[in-house]
Image: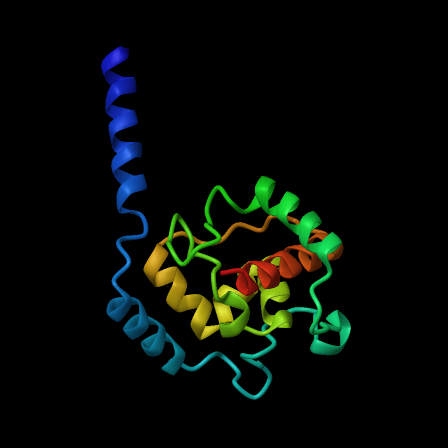
Length: 162
């Protein structure tokens, strides 16, 4: 029985260390570009800047100033639901690092993705590229709209810090 547990632990550890690979930027950029060139099922109806979901630039109304209270609430939610797979740096864990995400993606894309990951992964070339790199689909964390908005504000604050 002990040998079975030891074998299982070794397999899980091996899977963990190989799940996302290293930080080879040339490989990740190439995979992202390849996936971005793929076409989605109906390109006429899909907006890659907004993503698939209910959030629009108007509905989230981002201002230039960070809302510190929302960012703190987002940090708390992320600590429970996100940081087991994501780091706030550029380093990958299970999923990609968050540093710089708000300069690469729009606020509505981020909120649509974190509240609606499955349709986004199915339709969005950039989300598909990240899946190819990390090999793990982001699970739906059943975030409320307020929690998603708070996480976005935390990401924005994280991107403004040095």
